[in-house]
Image (spheres, rainbow, N blue to C red):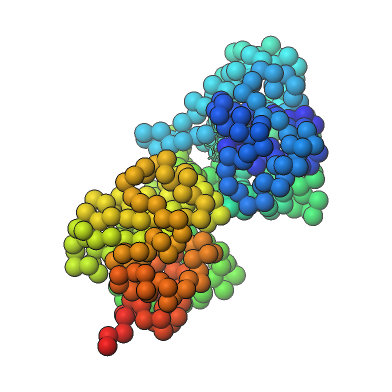
Length: 440
Ligand SMILES: NC(=O)c1ccc[n+]([C@@H]2O[C@H](COP(=O)([O-])OP(=O)(O)OC[C@H]3O[C@@H](n4cnc5c(N)ncnc54)[C@H](O)[C@@H]3O)[C@@H](O)[C@H]2O)c1
């Protein structure tokens, strides 16, 4: 099939590349001319494991092209996917201006029947709004479908190529038929394509993200109780996760969730609840707990250093909101850095993939290390904000020699307290007992 994907960011680029890999001819459209030029020249604009290989192959085999020209792309397509941003507005509701304005431009360009598929995460009722916005300009028949995307950054290619399920919200058998055909190669192993009405599809995406956010916030509250009462959240987590009614995933405590999805989607569901008169109180609570959680690690640092961080210098390992991505949107590391700087400390940071995106946001407010150990030079302590695999087995001897004090504040609970104790470090983590440095 001939497809256009409008918006070539984390979702659009992955979707475009994967649809091309399945044999479709895909044009990825973006308004960012520099991004399009880079992609046309074979240079990826995001880091995502496994993407480069597929991107290069499909570019070479001419199934994948990039353009800023929406009209030409639309006219050459049979299906158009919208993978545009839906950021949180002032009141937390999703800003639909990107989606609605692109929909109008598409409507003006249409010359034949078209299926427009909303892949962006959008509040209940958006497909109706898109149809309305297009109807004022379109002179041909069209369908608007909802097809929320469930990929996880850091595992996006795998998730897209082998989805656990594909959710399609459709308003006509014609749209259903096209989408089933398009997704057939991705569900050969038997995972289902769930067809439903568009409102249910839109809501499914938010319900998933808020449920996951709630699990994280719940475990962070349990961890805070562990910190106070002397229990160990790792034991609690294992004891809970082996209950098949609960399951093991998304039970890790830490420094809160970030990224482009959970924070804004939780707030958007709360707003939808307001709009429809069905308050989503749990979403509100997940959001509040998460905001507070981002500050927990620095509170531990503050209290360790007798409530005075002026003139202190800290190493920070990890900037990306999670491992496997260079995405810095709503990363807890940003709150940690802000809190440290506000208290008069300085920071030297290292991240295996996100230094470029982080530099755009942070400039020269912190210093940038070439590697993990360089970040630790002259540092009063090490803080860990992202659980990259490369941080999991550090050279403890080098670390001890490099840091001014053998103190680690681990916001992701990546070390075994026993190992850290053996290595002679003071170790703070989230919801687990503090390991005190053995005194001579
Ligand atoms: N990132 C994720 O993991 C993820 C997962 C599932 C769903 N989503 C949802 O998918 C949507 C896109 O997210 P993203 O992370 O890919 O965003 P992104 O910001 O990485 O990408 C959006 C792209 O759209 C482009 N753009 C903006 N206006 C445009 C226009 N008028 N025409 C063409 N291009 C335009 C931007 O330049 C950018 O490249 C959001 O609704 C998000 O909530 C994201």
